[in-house]
Length: 399
Ligand SMILES: CC(C)(COP(=O)(O)OP(=O)(O)OC[C@H]1O[C@@H](n2cnc3c(N)ncnc32)[C@H](O)[C@@H]1OP(=O)(O)O)[C@@H](O)C(=O)NCCC(=O)NCCS
Image (tube, rainbow, N blue to C red):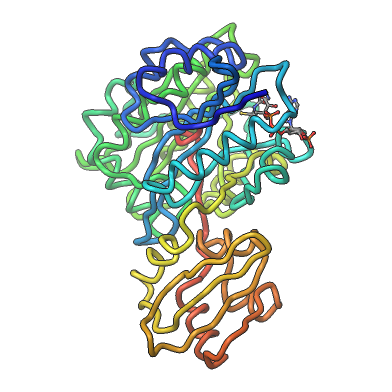
């Protein structure tokens, strides 16, 4: 079998879209066409497309002030009769190579940790769990529509893009783990490709105080008849400064609308959401962990550089050794003390994404060191640059 794996060429986009439909169901091509930053890793055998991994390129906030370039896999598929022959792994391998000129991380949302699909990501191709997500459910919502609560179809989102981005930053400034909210974010994400695949009625809810918008929630209800789950999903939620009273009123309005329609409410979150007490007080029940954000570092030195740039720099030359990688993370010049940080690939991925505390990993011997740099200096550098940041998740980002 002569296999070729490479980046999709623009003229092949319709073919790639049609290929994904054979595995994942209908996706009108116009949804693919209007994605502004989209590519794919594709596999061919004897000129025929036999595999495809669509890739959405996104600017991901790892931690306050740290935004990196990422590619998100979705609708990962190999033609059924050719599975378990290394095609999926080869497409990932090709993506790692051709994305190296533009991306720091290759990412995927994945669930079902005991499934063969998860095994493909975690064991075959080396994706690492960065963050676990759980779904909170409220079967019989009750609530009151508060003064200043307004509800619109999703087409209103573009008009409010700037204030939504500002409110999101204000609420979630201490967190990482989600795409950077700039002015272009909301008009794009509210019409992104996932809504072509999972047909969903999206709505924007605003909370005003003295005329100013102080909070918003975007909700989604899947198209009737097509899906078993017709819950109202909380897709995005933010109030200025994370104000608890505003959050309570905003959620009250959302619950009241869901109650009117007789729908349960489902709110997927990361483990560190600041709204756990709010969810508990309204009777939401937290499910077991259900999805992961997984990733493979593509450019380790670039990731480290982004962290060092906002965390006081680095005056050590750092090399990394793992069972599969040798690389220079940081070059502090010819006369700088040098050290090799030795660890598994998993720890490297977690530290470079701000998901593992470097000093604690050193203490716990998950990192060992080798080389002449003074130990205290190494410890101080890791403690400062490689700190752990809480991550948040908003279901609007799912792909
Ligand atoms: C997941 C998938 C893309 C892997 O592609 P592939 O070409 O079979 O990949 P590889 O040959 O490199 O790796 C195969 C591994 O994937 C795992 N796998 C996951 N789902 C699988 C499936 N439906 N059939 C066969 N293997 C599967 C197997 O455990 C296998 O491991 P093994 O070789 O140790 O048995 C392919 O199985 C597929 O298209 N599945 C259906 C769509 C899907 O579920 N996509 C993932 C979610 S978006």
